[in-house]
Length: 294
Image 1 (cartoon, rainbow, N blue to C red):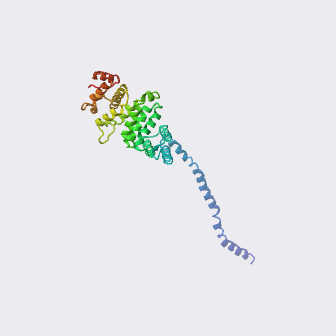
Image 2: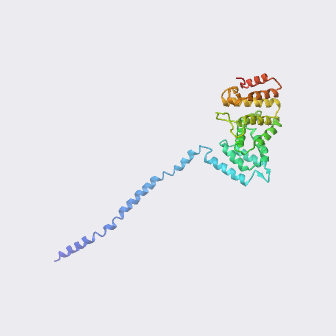
Image 3: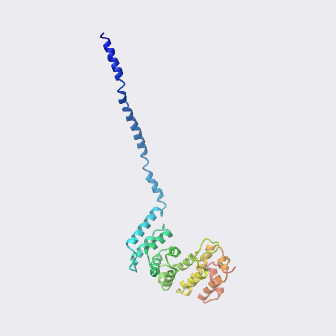
């Protein structure tokens, strides 16, 4: 009889033993969280990804340039260049200097900034004079500045009449300007080439309805009228040389100049300005590398 008691107790224990196991899984889950924590630790190296933004910065003129332009346009709206119809020259000079000093600026940036300045038509020539006066102290102004002005014209932000007024005004004071930059007169030739009517089949020139060689030539004559005769002659020679370089062939053989009497009229104008014979004018052009006879 005493031996049966332990057996019964053993059976009871056997039946109650299965209950604890549900509590035993608790240690196992502890190991599971550890694994994710290890993965999280391994994932931490990902933060260096922001460094990938650094390599993108070499594309100066990308997002940062656009942000700078947006900031400038916002500033112009807050502190305008023109107030009550009066041009604030100091403010205009500041804006133009900031645009000029950033070589990453594209043409569209100049167009956007100029549009934001809201310069009225009757103040455009004055603003252009301020711009070119600033650039004449720069070595690259003779080509870069007129290219910018030409694009503003093509983008309908500046009137051709305003450019003419500005160039005529410069012609009346060219000697003083040449004291700052002896190549300042190159601006005339470069601008005329930038707005030259697009030759057929070429990849350069200005294509505009109603803009023809006749229109271009009339405009050119008006712009150089205030220059001394010898300087006007130099401008025309340079124009023909630059056009010939763009065409990559003697100007006398290009289609744009072989039709009609276009070339003869320009050579005749050079002869008139130099008070010399046409043959002498042709010789002068030859000295500039321009071939006027096929």
